[in-house]
Length: 356
Image 1 (cartoon, rainbow, N blue to C red):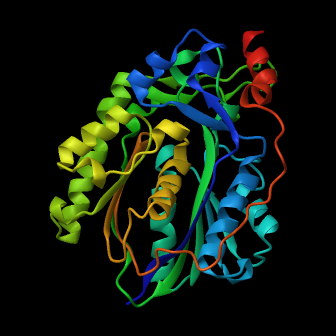
Image 2: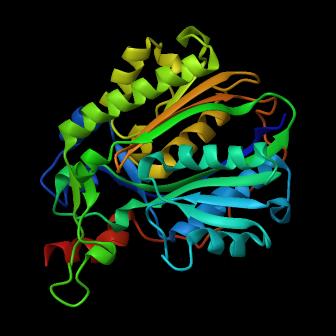
């Protein structure tokens, strides 16, 4: 039987940092207000587009795996911030990487997207449809934000994370997953009047608005992720005491703490980096997984649980049996278009546009 080992990992986090104090100079908020409610201290603002961020994360993952881009036969980009709707962002990533011939598509499941994509790529490898796959979560959430709305402007950031999967006979990689969607509640988290729902010619919106019902989302998130995690444990015939590390979606530290308490895990068993990046949607789990390996939190053979929720309302949990590799084969020195501006300078036009 074939499995899909994670043999490489990489991330890209933009250099421009937007702190809570920076936000307080833009909207009516404060570091204390944001930190106490979300756990976020800062987030990154990108000077490059989604495909370029995805490509930089992918290049690091490929170097870590010790393989060339033309060996990849499947590329999935999980994103709700595509550079273009037609063609897809994944095809641009293929072009930038030079991995000609790889099957490419985008997957839109918001913050749950990376786990959805990881399960999809794993399934394709397990049935023999692919041998090596590149799974990327990449988002430029700052593009959507209304900088007059402190309830949502403080939450999101930009970034990308990627993993390389390879077919193996060793029982490892993503082994069990539980996914679903509660569409009855899809309106509590949405970007309204965007896409073909919007009126192209009459009163086009000057600023997008993320509708975000925080308390309801909190309840759905904890319930959905907790139930999915318990289901996955039962599928894998594991107890929670068998789990070495939880890598949850990074949306709100209170949600993470509630899930941790529900699963009865110790602090050292939970990967948390929301304070540095905020909510990067489909990139959060990918970036957190990458940093967990970099920080030595993941050892060969570890049992990893990941859980996420997102707009839709989508939810997912996955059990990953880590393989043997925890150190990169090659290091990648990231090369990108240099950024000489601060985060506030990068956002100046958007901030002024939201005020008009």
